[in-house]
Image (cartoon, rainbow, N blue to C red; front, side, top):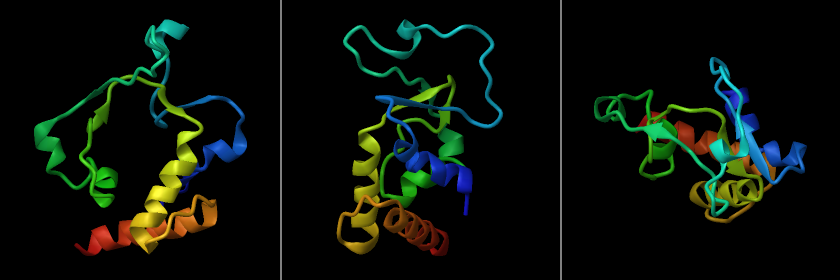
Length: 125
């Protein structure tokens, strides 16, 4: 389906960093980034997004969240990088496997099969 999207879900397999940072292909930094831009004073990750009500009804926005029966927190990220705790990715893969097959499995191969199953199910309605 979308190899670059899929790679983000298994990025923990390729890094030992505590936090992973993701960018859209068309995003770029136009200034320096310092730790206080990325982390709140209590250590939480900072993510900034915008919800565009009209866009939430369009198929191109929020489709991943809707595929997993989740409510999208934001339909459009307004600042990059988007940060994710590396240790959360195996739990996410297990959750998607649970939705698709009824059993949690965080292995990349099972996750990718589950991801495609959920996406295909959503496409069919």
